[in-house]
Image 1 (cartoon, one colour):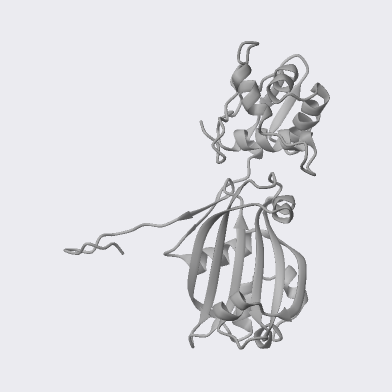
Image 2 (cartoon, one colour):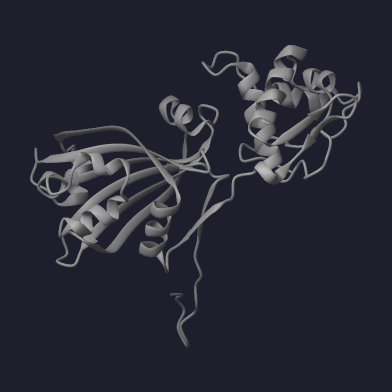
Length: 276
């Protein structure tokens, strides 16, 4: 089964003759990255468990087998497996090996275009938010354009990390016009969904426009989302618009593709070539 980076996921039950598979796994690691090799192995194995390559109750390849596959020391593999166990993704048994336990798998967060606002509210209520930074600053050219501001206008820039069951799934940077941001306490960004704060500030969002693209995780994003640097992430840029037509928020979100998906349905108009 291919992974998001196009590299084969399954190492199966390796033999000494399966050098091509082992070399392919070794090529997934990058010693030049600041992320330790054991944690890189952990991330790869975690993705395989969460994607179903290794099923619930399945025994993972042994430490020596994985060490050959990834071309690392057995101690490195041991630390990776211990980290999987610490996150309840596997259980380790002397004489039986390391067994997958999908009870620790974090559920996939799903949103839709049809219920965008309610989906966002739901995420805000059911996920944990960590406020990483917040400051007032001059809006750059893109933010000025998106929020329809005067050049040099001030916005509140906030960076938040969303988690589900303690596992990070989105890195969010929001921009709110300063006059709107001044109507709610900064401390409430730690505990209250921003859509709720906007509503309380008299700037309720009733419409959204967004752009969805694929991107590569920067070192900062990768560290916060706990994914390898440069790995694929889902990037969503969204503009929230008030009842008077004024943009009230711009948000740029980076999402782990194994933890978030967007869902939409289309219906063909009767007698028309287009789809709604």
